[in-house]
Image (cartoon, rainbow, N blue to C red; front, side, top):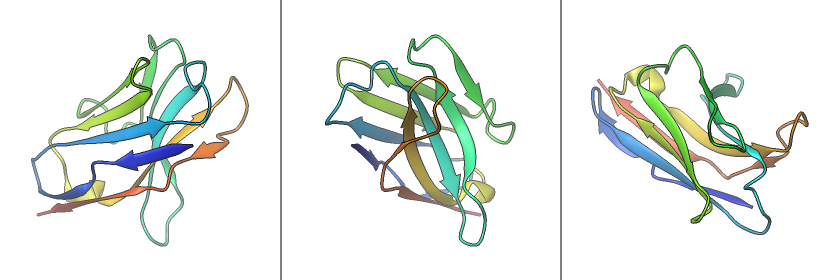
Length: 116
């Protein structure tokens, strides 16, 4: 199971760190990711980190402003978001997948609101 937290209300230009706690299984061999969704729109990819932790990828919209990381010992995945923009406002979800399988595990989401 995945539990996301760390969302909140922040002014444009501010920062937030989202956390995702993994429990119930060993996610150390899973690719972990963050996605976000705005009401009325499809869920979109934000960032992923491979099971090895040495490879990350980002959506163009957040590249250079966000950093995904994972702590194997704590079974945590983080998304550090800097220079936040109003268009970053969304519900953020953490997710996990094994290998080339679809994203099969999802957290409950945490709301991020960026005011202008």
